[in-house]
Length: 336
Image (cartoon, rainbow, N blue to C red):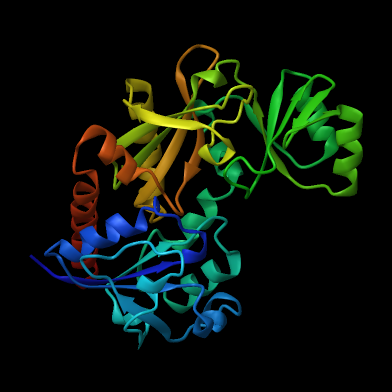
């Protein structure tokens, strides 16, 4: 078995004990196919040039050990530090919270063109914009890119809609419009009030038809290199239509149905070509009672450890094995 060196790049300031980087990091450490597992965090003062000025250069890394764990003060990411370069590693896992910085993605793509990234920064950036879903209209509910107030007016005339800021996440900034009634971040407005706010601070949105079955929850499905690892159903909090756990939703284990398997099969070739290896998709129940694609997340994919705890399967270890097989396949192709 070939042994590879992997560097994890993260930002522990937004971590909790539930963050998937810790169980996956431990599994990488224990896997015989990885001879070196190191991690760097954006919060280290020495990394300002890399993360803030987007300049290539050395980073301060710490080794991931068998007991690698979350601490609020980040102690497991600040011990036994040593200077490293991205080129010291066979693969770099970009585990940063969304939205992924555009200038950082450009620097990584330009300065490290031969580096194997998981996921590739260009792929993260493209899938990180909500309008990427417009490339897959057959998989999604009716949607439209709304770049002007007139676009919004025309789209809402067809049915109740939801407006999603293109690079927001976790339900932030989402607007629901039903006729003259607007709901935004817990506030109810008239459309005239919303229009005035929009004209004062316009931004592009992905407009999506509001689905009447949203109370049935959205399902997060985690995928590694085309393999479905597990799924969790997130149910909105009472009185809410937002399913995100960050917005008060509740998560339970779920099964993946045939419609969702077909969605993933349709997405996988495009995502693989973009260098997106691990990702999560969200589905909602459409008006025809079939699941449709509502989100793609290729940045900080979570939930795998929680799914494993709920179904009793070693999903983290299985995911790391799939990851190793992918890396082995890619690096052998590069060196042949």
